[in-house]
Image (tube, rainbow, N blue to C red; front, side, top):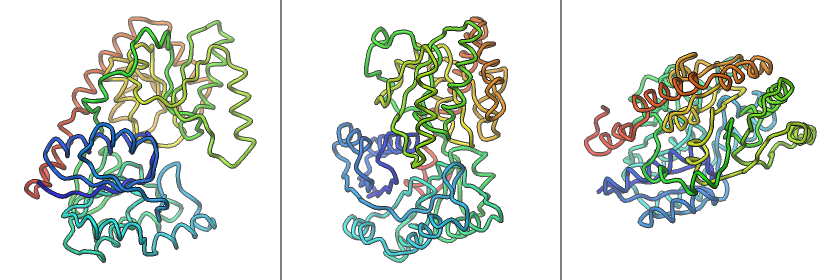
Length: 381
């Protein structure tokens, strides 16, 4: 048994949170002692409920360094300067946690936590650090911030794991590394409600009220579909409280939601299985490269996907094979590919089956073995 600490940056139930949940399941199953430091939120509740042997401790503020696609400031933005300076400060809550737990291994579950690699080395240079990069690390105008994060990673990370080959190529480090793609945990295969309770889902979007996830693009495309006489419902899952400080953006979403008919909003749900299983197509209209977890989840239930044509998604989605792609922000193009998909039942079934094959090839729980092998014998396989 190995004593493992995990530091996670967000208390909500998102893609990185699901990865934490899955990692916790595999580590507990392997017989390790697991301690997790994270902000309070739904995620902690799920872990506490399903893994009672795991020790949880909460942190109120994290000195993170956000520099990833969709979550980065301009270099001279006051927000960036403040976050950079804070990221270099001693974090007493983190230090207290590490000294109290005294783990042999620390897993940092996001690129925004890279500065904590050096802080860990100062606390105890014997701790083995494992960095899991969940995001596409941004380059910026001159690449200085990316280079800074790269140098920290190469200097202090004993093992860096990426969720895709694309992200590995983009970050391009020379230290020990591997690929650990996402997967769906065994526990989450059990839907929280019967399919009959969900009703007709139609087009399924799982990104909440977010410009990054492209809800505004999708709503405009659905408005065009309604004008063409296509009444297939649109179901929206995810956090619907817009965190933007721009009131005009919130008003934009409110107006779009009111103006488009046939929209069903469920908000946050713990399990999406029943919604995916009864949908026609999963739509992932992101506006910047982002974790393609909805593509994988759709594949588990033999559903096709319509998504933005980003290189970051092409490992999971092949155009005209397991789904269709459209150019970023092109509302009419999105409406056209959705119409093509919905008008052809054979295409829906064929692409859904192809996506199931893609899922089985890329996204099983065997992906955790690269981490488990390293913990057991120090090898990366």
